[in-house]
Image (cartoon, rainbow, N blue to C red; front, side, top):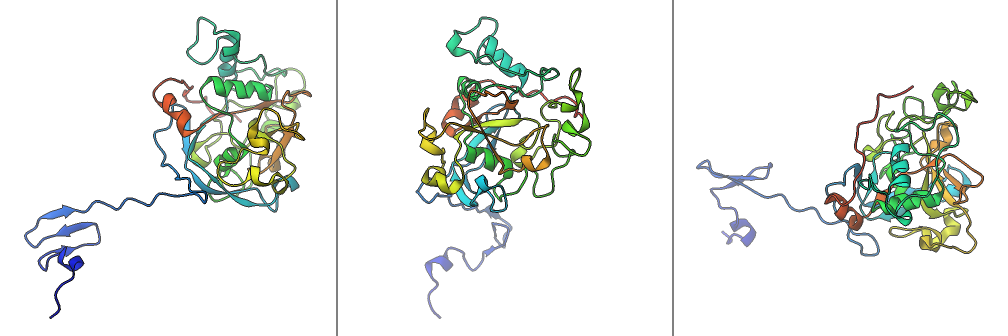
Length: 336
C-alpha cells in the first residue's frame, strides 16, 4: 500500500471532514475550520479594492469594483456603454437639504453654530427662487455648482464624480434605474407623470402646476440604500461635461476617472458641468441612471439643481471619528 501523502496525513483515518467546515472526530470533539479569506479584488491597473468599512454618519458604502457605465440604447452623450472601475467609497443617503445648506451658508459646517465661521468657511449664498421649496427637509435647489462643491468640501467630503454617481444610482449590474429595470413611476420616484409634475402634487401659491420637490426620502431607497437617486431634484456632480464617453477618452476610463482635465478648476474647451438623476419637473426618461444634463457651473440661467456628497476612504476616516457631522434624522412621512 502506498504511503499517505502529506495532505492526506493532515486528516487522520479516525477523523472525518464534513461539508460545513468542521472536523468531526469519532470521540465527538469538533474543531472549527476558519473560512478562507476571499481573494482581494484587483483593478486592471493593480489597484487593490478595499472592503467596505463602517460608513460615516448619514452615508452608505458603495463597494468598489467594475460597473457598467452608459447605455448604447440611451441618449448620444451616454454612449458607448463601457466597464469602469472604482475604488470603494461612500455616498450621502439623502440629497443635501434646505436646512443643511442654509446652516452652512449662515454659520459654516454642521457644529459651527452659534458663532459664524469666517466667510471662507461658509457656503456661498444660494437656494430656491420658487415658493414652496424652502421646507427644512426638502432638497436644497438653485445653488451653483460652486456652492455644491464648497458645501461638500467644508464637510470633509467631495462632489461625486460622474462615475461615482452613476454606480451609486444603478448598482454593479448596470440597471436602468436605482431600483432595477422596471419603469419609473410615482411609487418609485418623484417625477412628472400623467397626473402632472411632482406626481400631481401642486406647488403653493403662484404657478401651482409647476409642482415642487418632496422632502428627502419620500420614496423607497434604491441601490446601496440611497434615496432619491432618481427624481426629486437634479444633482450636480464634479465632472466637466463631455459630448460622449468616446470623445472624453482616457479621462473617462480606467480606475476612478474624474472626467475631462481630471476635474481641474479650468478645462480648455469645456464650459459646462453635469447634473444627474432627473427631477420632479421632468418625465421618467430623465430619471434614468445614465441620463446626463450639462449646465454652466454658475447656474445662470437659473435652474433648480441640488446635490449630495461623497467621501473617499481617506475622507471617511475623520468623518467616522466624528470630525464631520451629518444629518441622520428620519425623513418625514412620505408625500404624494
